[in-house]
Length: 274
Ligand code: KIV
Image 1 (cartoon, helix red, strand yellow):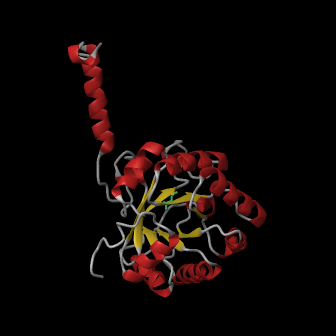
Image 2 (image 1 turned 90 degrees about the vertical axis):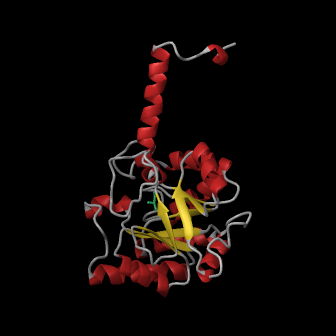
Image 3 (image 1 turned 135 degrees about the vertical axis):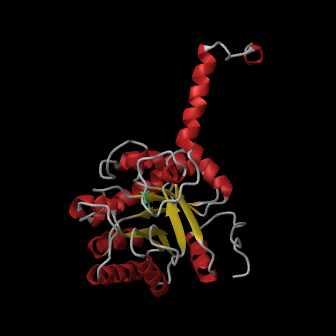
């Protein structure tokens, strides 16, 4: 590839742009956002994809898993993000219980996300088990991003957040699922917390972009949860997480300074009042 930033001047990232990025070998940068203010900052940086992840259940609502968040809550976060974004592709997660085992309900959920939030695409967790739902959503012309490997909505089935697909059987199921999702028409797949060699193998064996979180460097792009990479959440430190800021410390410092200034009558000063 001649330039590492050849797609940064596109005015709107589409699923087609992501496909071209894979072909040209330009990595895709994706982050989560759940509100207007952060989404506006992210979009101004030229980030390729913004995911309104159901990780909102953890980092916005304080739940211990992604299961409790509702479709209405995801739509609320989606609306706030979409209102801020001009360039990035906005993908919204379908929450737990809105698409598994009932493809008609899946389609209704996806339609609500597209109509009410104004998203560009939806993301669903799982492979063969949710294929009927994926097919039905795609048949309505709604772009679908898959999600394989560690699928947090199935935490109660697995009981742990450890690395997935470390044995031959699971790895081969994951590869088959990736092919099924590609064949169905998904435009991209997120691979979460799997061995790097498997991430690279899946990436080479499908034509659609593979975006990793803890899936190594051999994939087509990376995604992180914004609050984790900014150091807002401090109680979550998996090996794959790189912290680019320690915002919780900076916010604490600023708030302590404010408290001090208020208590000592330093704030507001002459210039800060009418
Ligand atoms: O909900 C989320 O934030 C996600 C990412 C971890 C990929 O699905």
